[in-house]
Image (cartoon, rainbow, N blue to C red; front, side, top):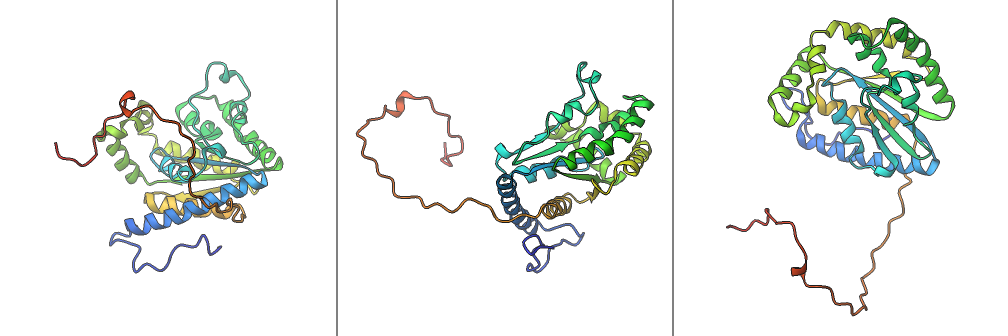
Length: 281
């Protein structure tokens, strides 16, 4: 493992008594890894690479939280998150992979799929949204489709976030209670609630066909969110050999203002009220 990706071992203790990461250690590690992500993005742009990262897993496994931390420091012009809604009536008549192809990266771009074409092998299979024939056709053609992507030069990385039954239930209950998280729990999640074993069977069958040498699955143990995020980001940084291609440091010279332009008075404009100025009423 490259030294720039290795965990910081200098802290006296990284863990709490329950083996959860301490907040300070987590934040320092995340900041360090995010800086490496910035360097990686600069390298991807310089080399004209095309990168696709797929995030799959059970509901509430922590995919969205990891994606959020990955894109947080990156330039939005070279990094996109794709999270598609269910197919439209028109899309439902197209070649299954067609609507995903439209979102593949151009040179110098990283695209993260928050769920992907694997919907067919997961929720569509379990909930009966596709026929047996469509499902079997997907398992047959998906490896061929991904082989085409890889042969075209796309870097394809696939992550499966694994969460236990108990931890998923705890997160679901939190979503039903917390108004700020309620949007994360839908009627579809409720319908899927009793289908744990069906999803397990579908995932295992999916892996059997699509965990290939050209595009393997990488499983992220996700019961502890902080560790899952750090582990996933660290692994992603190792999938693409990169060098520090950050722009050179620029010095900011003193500003020289020679114009005699007189600006309008502040009273001419409407300002947002400063509610947090710290002054007592």
